[in-house]
Amino acid sequence: MSLEKLLENPRVWRGSSQIDARARLVSGYPELDRCLPGGGWPLEALTEILIGQYGMGELRLLMPALAQLSAEEIQTHTGEYTEPGWIAWVAPPFQPYAPALQQYGIDLSRMLIVRPKDDSELLWSAEQALSSGTCAAVLLWPDTLDDKGSRRLQLAAEKGHSWAIAFRPLAARQQPSAAALRLELESTGQGTRVHILKSRGGRPTVLDSLL
Image 1: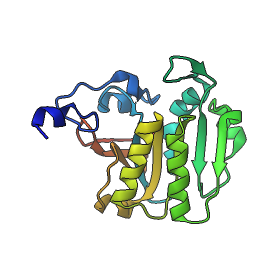
Image 2 (image 1 turned 180 degrees about the horizontal axis):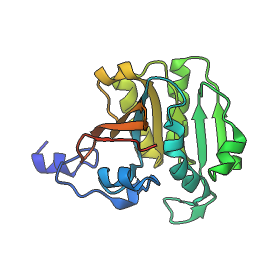
Image 3 (image 1 turned 30 degrees about the vertical axis):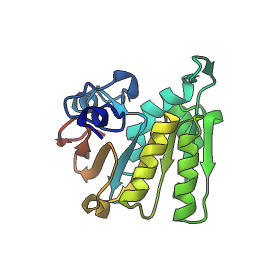
Image 4 (image 1 turned 90 degrees about the vertical axis):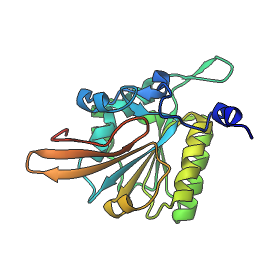
């Protein structure tokens, strides 16, 4: 295959390529948006959020964007608009607290909670939800996720025009990943510090007391 043909492949990312703003969603945190190429979360892609423990602000970080997605109509490949997409929660380690989600503006009627039996079923469930074309976002909490698994999620998100968010332990920082964006959250005396470890088209940086 010639180089020209290879570069025409939409799965090949080039550092000088212009970021498509339509595939971005403002985070609700201007300081974070300024550090993300295109000015927001990368949709149709996998985002990984690394945490040392639950409750560090990882969900609060996503709430403005998820609220927007739960209210927006989805445009199909035919140009028609359908009702807002589902927000799927795959294997959450807790029962999502409905009153808090409503307070953030999440439409609870668009939420879907999936309880797989194990990690292999979890990955399959997340892939199916992402590639279905009916989920605006899929949140998942895998115990393990190797490079191959992250690539499967990335491809499924692209296929279904969805947003995958995987919550992973800090040890995953040393593991390869196909995620377009990797963040690490760190608790400090002033709040939660956000480390941007990897950002497709951007640079690593640290945001102090973002949450």
